[in-house]
Image 1: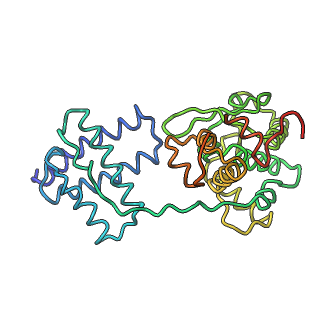
Image 2: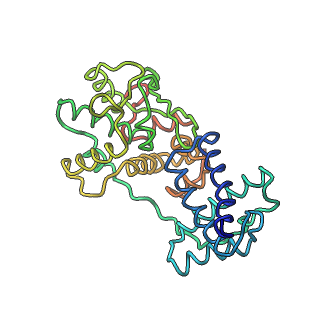
Image 3: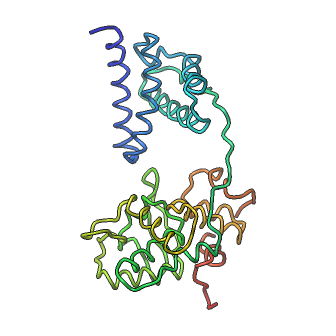
Length: 306
């Protein structure tokens, strides 16, 4: 075995164990694990080219050089570079806990700042046009329910595709969802979405363990299936923007903040670990999620009438 091959094997063994840790212990999604694998493979390639045989031998300036090379010679965007740096830092923190490195060479990595812009959103008129799907055929009933729920509760598309009827408490108007990092949260469901879901359940005669939103043959609708439905409905409803699941999540957050100014409540609704992530929607300052939701969401129920 050549020195380079031996080096790659030694570096790769640690990476394989780290990725298994992400799958088994952190319960990260396959796409997230793939992101980490791709990011660390780039650093491993940089290390191999320099004859580094063990991760403990990688110096901070070499890690910075790997990042700089991807900026200057490969034209990576600031957001991509920040993602690489974050993945590298996480990997070395794990190596340190495993006793394989004494220092984290990625701790001080500098990457170009990303200008965070407000996400695209639909205004309330566009949103109303999109979600009020006409018709009583099976497909229309299903699409109306999934659109109302995405917008009502600010769900990620993966969350929508994973929920089952047992997760919905129609009496309380809440839904239990499992989001990033296998974290569970309870989110409100507005009156319009509850009505659409009731029609869907009556149509499908679903059991508690059935997927809440189903595709053909009763299987959960896939994220790509949801995206296709949104694109089709947007065209049919005359919404001439690029419509995708996260756009409804952005719109839900933006409309709630416009009405309430309650950043903390929206952070809780969206399941953001860091309030800084929620702040991309506004520069307003903070503060009972259900109360804010009912008072502010354009399609929420109004307690006590109205």
